[in-house]
Length: 585
Image 1 (tube, helix red, strand yellow):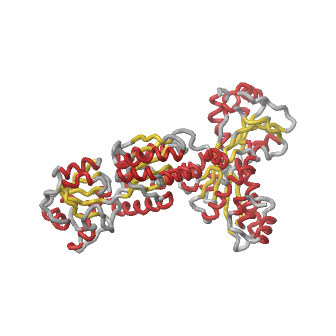
Image 2: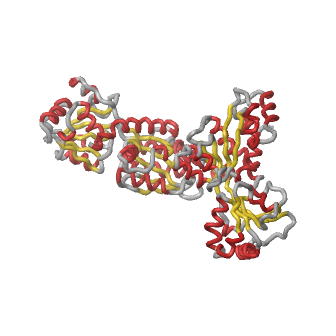
Image 3: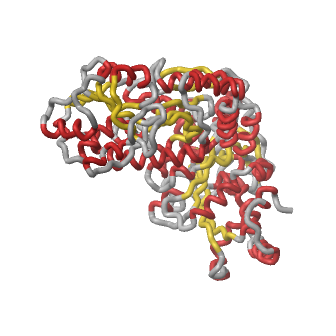
């Protein structure tokens, strides 16, 4: 009987499935020996897995093959170390692989070395360290740390792995316990085979490795896990390599291995499946207050949007939602803060993702990318307005631009630093062949100061979000709206219509886009939690009381959703990427 997950995969014919099942009855471990039997139409996924996940993989691999018709060609190696067959060594010499399965720390190291696609990483299982002795040998007491230490000191010989667990024991735990100098000479690092196999041969008296690597070995007795207070939990994860030749099927395999439907099989091999833990945590999530971090100061547009939403979102989540502000460096400080928090779903990011997130990346000050965030909902879209001081001598946009061209440094403008208006002010000069230095451009850190400058006649004109400029309407004379369509709140032409007398046009840059996001790592690790939060925002935006509050405060209330929000982010980032060089001029 096929698992429910496998029923959802594309069907293959019964004959084909039975043939594949029979052909792979000896497990994926031996598939490399049968390459000559593969037909030209058989799809393959090349897998390299470390020992920690091997027992589960040997059961689940044939199930995946039988259900999908995809052949798994498998090799094995340690997560780390310099052994010839270790996964890092295999990749460094160019050995082909689509999927690798190994400890999360080693996977992250390979990702940093550009060997693994960052977004493909998925945690599969958690593994703990256990102890084995030869069958029939006395069972040492390791129930407490003191008895564990006594057993180590009393042992004639000790074996530990060359992978994650052994590295922890030999370089961290044994030195911390103060016994490494006493036991180092009788301890042996086991390369390229299971520690329990060496124990079974009688070559070491006691051996330590991941429990899942001990249990399948004949000729040993499993003593138990090492004490909790000295235990090391290792997460084993899967990722797609940068050189993968079959990324699509590689993703199908990872989806299968990380699905809740295979959790029981994984648990039977001595591992804790992350999928079942995720489901359990999702069922009772959230069980404490959630924090929304605003990338601007109190009272700004993003802050007003967030505080208006917080109580309603909290009602949907069943937990209080608190709001904190992290302003500075064009939202760079807030972005870094959010990314530094635990990726558990209790931190949400509220910001003006366009243009501020794009600019903090493009100006070279950020060590993150737009792919490090998962976008919940973009709900407030705003267009930029070009407006003169009400007593300005210039009658329209062409006359203003001509004055900048012919009378350098005499025209002053205000913008918010790094905003869409900032970029548009420079782009207007660029497409008209006007030197950037001709304009006396004053940049401000907030919209209030920029608007005050034009309202008070300190500058001649401003390019800024139309929303919020209502407060100075009596002090300005609008010239154009930066949009493809007219704005009913401002009786002015669209930008390119205003430029028609000059026989030019400019790309229409997106204005401010405000909304909510979380970290991409959180979404990858806890997709159920992410969906629960997204649904809470969606339901909140259907609440008539909230919608009335937002409308009265002139705050956007659009439900865009995660998928369309991500598309919008990528589109706007691409536009800003094309013209960001102007902000450096």
